Length: 211
Image (cartoon, rainbow, N blue to C red):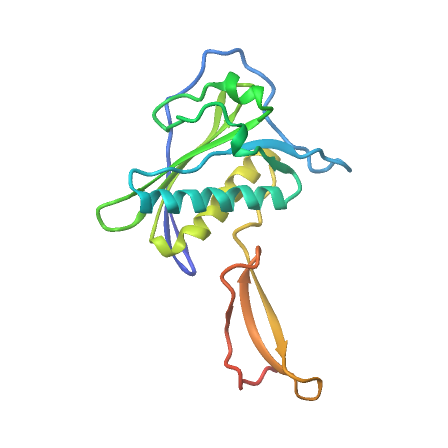
């Protein structure tokens, strides 16, 4: 399926991976957000590495957005990367789930970033239930490089929905009235930014009038 986004195109490919582990079925990884107090779930978000330094930089930045979004929700706690035992995890191999359980990760996000022939980024990721040793989500996205941050928000939304059962809110924008200048001559401008405060820009000129 392909989704048209207001600020650019992101093509979404549902990837059905054949990886599975020979392990008895376990209760599904889930966060019940209807409870009064929820202990944050430890989740490991690995860098979405690529074959070149430039692409790997995009991948690292994207995974950073994913981890920050999930932590900001208060329902997840990103596991410190310095604690990782399995350093060579790729999309071509199964995670060594025992290594991730040792560091108390209940969920694992792995990914890869690459550049396709037309210059777009391809971002793939998988979400794993570490204790059940089962894949929960597998998706790939194609987009222009300028949209890398938005893809991070979209991935965080996908993970949030899969584990909580509720729609994510990370790929949202806030429109507000920004004020500046002296108290007796305030200047108002319409502005927009991502929910995390990034990608801020003004929608009206400094001398514009707001109704």
